[in-house]
Structures are given as structure tokens and as C-alpha cells.
Length: 147
Image (tube, rainbow, N blue to C red; front, side):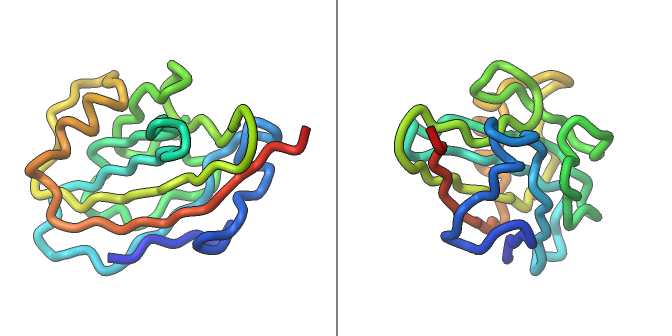
């Protein structure tokens, strides 16, 4: 599988508009090459430089979904948006307290939908993934606040 975005390059810098310093909208994402036996997708965005703080977790995106448009968080996307590390459901853009942080976007192809209920937290999504992943793809980028 491959995950990419038109908003920034792999290993590049996340534009301000997708962060707490901008309009904080979720970036557009597209994935290709999923196996044929996929029943659903999940997406998790973490900051490994902040103890894997979760910026976005989405469970049970339909198997026919292969992209999320810019600003998809908070809209009807067909999946369940979990509560992120900021304590709110949906996308919470990069907002590092100091220095440059890395952000890892991972899409998971799943053998079955995740049993997470209607308003899970990100940890529940991460736990439910175990044993259901058939493929995954990652994209990473960085962001540093301009103080």
C-alpha cells in the first residue's frame, strides 16, 4: 500500500493551515494498493516526538474509501472519528510546544471492522487494530511552530 498527500512531501514540512497556528483543517490523504480482502480502513496520526500523542484516529472507514478530502474531519466520512490526544473528536493539528516534531500518518487495511463503539478514544482504536491489520502505509512530515 502507498499513502500520499498533495499538501506536502514525504519527510517535508506540514503547511501552517493544517496546524494549530493556521485553520487546523485535516489534510487531504489518498491511499492505493490495498489488498482485495479489505473490509474497512483505519487511520491514525501520531507525534512520535511527544510519546506518540494522537492527533487523529478514525476507525471503520468503508472498504471503498481510498481518500479523505481536505477538511474531511468533522464531516460525514463514513467512519468513526475517535477522541484525540487533545480530548476532542477528529483532527487536532500539529501544535508542538517547542522545536520541530515528526508526524506519522498511518492508514491500516483491515480484515474486519473494529469494535470500538460510537465515540471511542484513540487508545480504543489502537487496541482494536491488533490482529485485524492486513496491510498498512505510512507518510511522515515535520512541523515547528514559529514563535
